[in-house]
Amino acid sequence: MSFIDAHTRVVTLLGYPIEHTLSPLIHNTAFQHQQLNFVYTASAVHPKRLNQAVAGLSALNMAGANVTIPHKEKVLPLLDELTKEAQAIKAVNTIIIDTNSETNQTVLRGDNTDISGFLKPLETYSSRLKNSSMVVFGSGGAARAVVYALLTRFSPEQCTIVARTPEKAEQLAQDLSSYDTKGSLQVCPLDAGHQKVRTSQLLVNATPVGMHPNISASVWPYPEDFHSQQIAYDLVYRPRKTAWLQTVEAQGGETIGGLEMLIGQAAASYYQWTNKEMPLQVVQQTVANYWNSSNSS
Ligand code: NAP
Image (cartoon, protein in one colour):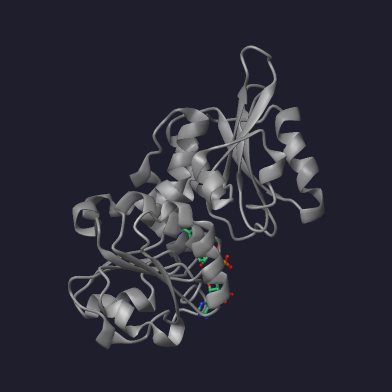
């Protein structure tokens, strides 16, 4: 597609602020590579105007939207339908707009592709992770998606949320208790997490610790707790390899950076709007080039 015309389908990101988002780069790279007549924009929507913005999606006959901070939870009551994932974690990051063939009415469906995006890089480890012990650092929105994904995909023996505000983690555990069929969810304050970290096969950082520009910070700065049988997965994607992942790697562990999840969740949204698989390598290369040219890690 070389120009925007009357047939162009529009997808937008609803967030506030949205200046640092990589989503337009990711999706427009894929649309152009596959010559799809779609365009992806970013819309700074003040929280007071979320209702109007969501109503505008169908009024403007848009193809769909992504939703990011601070609207992921507030958008739920504004939608017609929710997938079971969005319902379970009470957060939406993707809106799909369909037309009901019987009534000819538009239907806004909310989904959460953070869950499948998070699980994608873990596919190759699935036999190792089934029924194993896991630690999730953090108890915010991303931790909610991660804990749901781990419980439903791997039935862990233990899944411990290590959090600096244990009350929030307790609430998360309670909200997801119906998916915890083995009673494996536990909460642990940061200062008591060493034993859990040492005995876990998978460690997930769902906090912003280590994110650019604070790249020397580490969510768990204790090399003695890591070993070669562990997989460390950092949701932080900038830098691509955080200080924490470097420490785990130095102890022989395997690591996964957050860029894979970022592109994985984008690919799952993209598929729902276009019915096409995102060209992952092209997108990864474009993001890497963008970071190199903007002279950051
Ligand atoms: P959030 O809702 O603000 O939650 C952040 C969590 O981190 C909270 O539990 C917070 O604890 C904890 N935290 C913050 N600073 C901490 C510190 N210094 N030590 C210990 N815990 C700390 O944010 P979110 O939406 O969950 O996102 C978390 C991170 O994941 C962000 O860096 C985000 O960019 C990343 N993320 C990446 C992807 C991806 O595709 N790769 C997707 C989603 C999110 P309190 O509750 O005590 O404040």
